[in-house]
Picture 1 (tube, helix red, strand yellow):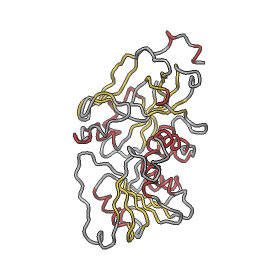
Picture 2: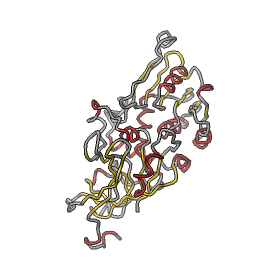
Picture 3: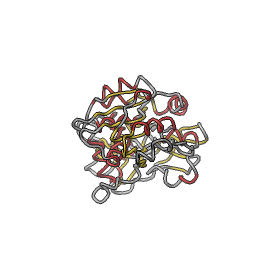
Picture 4: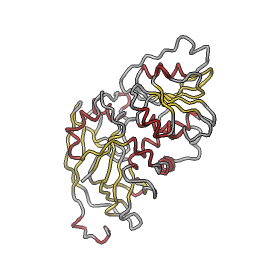
Length: 333
């Protein structure tokens, strides 16, 4: 057991991934301080790259006006560079309170081989959730909050525009609504297999369903937003889940947008949905999201793992604009 290991066997330093300039990253060595009583020291097992937000950080496209709001919970450095970013880590507690020793835990930590944190900053991975699949925790939390914001119901016709990780998870959650007609829409025809694996329908933009009761847009581009607005039925809600960084997006708000009284609403995981805010905490929401990851069908979203040490040279490929990777799994030594 880890609790039987002498203190000298525990890590005194760690390797961390830092974004240092537009499209440049490096692994840096960081010293670990003496552990504060009640805190935990965790050795990372798996992590994941967020191809949406993290791509913008990697390219230096976080707007200056959003520097404070876009800080990850345990980010190092400051925008634009250098920053230690990321928010998906699954690791094993190697030092800390007896109740957590040896436990597999999830946290919103950056990409780092070993880290220290307050005990309440980690959540024990639920039984039945594979360590590799648990890296989807933050994405599932975003999807869960979006579904709360959009409020789809049984029997609804629902379109999700954009088959990235969050879009796929939103479709997966909506697919559990009795009688709902759920369609994942994406420009990549290969996403049809992903949609089938998740139990929902698939369509290319030109064949996207019409007269939908709820539309959730996740593609992060103007063409996708145009498709989303075109899918909406009269007085329907289009939930905008994309984040565009410093980009400007043209929205087609002419035509029938006003006469059909379509509602365009934003959603952001930094706020608990208003429908749940009086009763839910951020920890409760993340715990619920982790519990929703027991379905092995969700493994279809995970790309084969890359070694942590190789990230600086692999990032251009993984975060490139032409990449079709969904969730890039990171394996730690």
